[in-house]
Length: 249
Image (tube, rainbow, N blue to C red; front, side, top):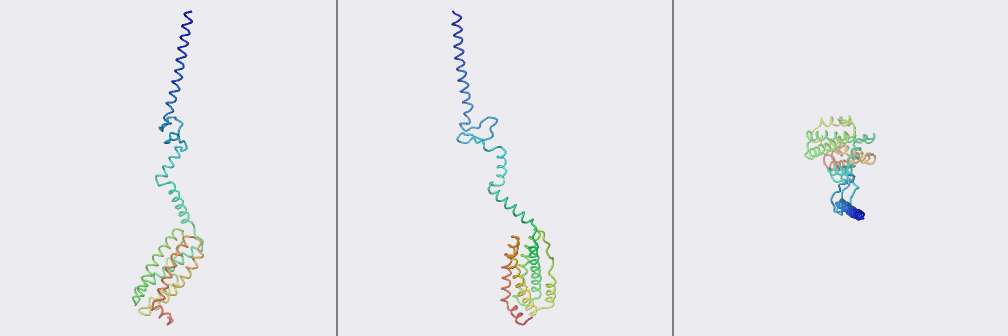
């Protein structure tokens, strides 16, 4: 009888111990999970995300995604980088594209006209008599040199071989002007280089603006046209040009 009582006491103690053990496991589980609810990082090995301020786990960003974002962040915001990168790619593709024959011809004509006006302007500096003619010649040197540099840069970027000297017609005109001086030079220079050449070039630029296929070529043509128009207007207002036209020289 005594043994039965002792056995029952032991079973009762074991049951109580088992109950406390279960309560302890639940308490430990609650403690282990509480860090994620309080906003601290979880130590679970499979968690790739981060806890947010409200205690929930944001597992949408993987480590690889974070690295890519960081790489973009080194060069600026992702949006800005995307726009810049797309623009640079488009510009690079355009720069390397080969021009159609018509656009190549436009650049060659522009280069030829620039070289002719530069050479004529140099003659005006050395052979001209009036201050107006000399000033006009200097403007031709300055403006057409600047334009020729832009034509060369675009041609080089697009693989276009430009002429390196004026054509036969302008060489012959330069040789003729080289033999003149004083008032005779002023009239001949303004009639040919000032009026006729600029009328021809201006008309070609207006046509080229309509026919150009490449946007960069068209943009350069449209930039050059008003400059040539201004040159023509200045030439038309100069006394030497009027005198040369009326005399037929």
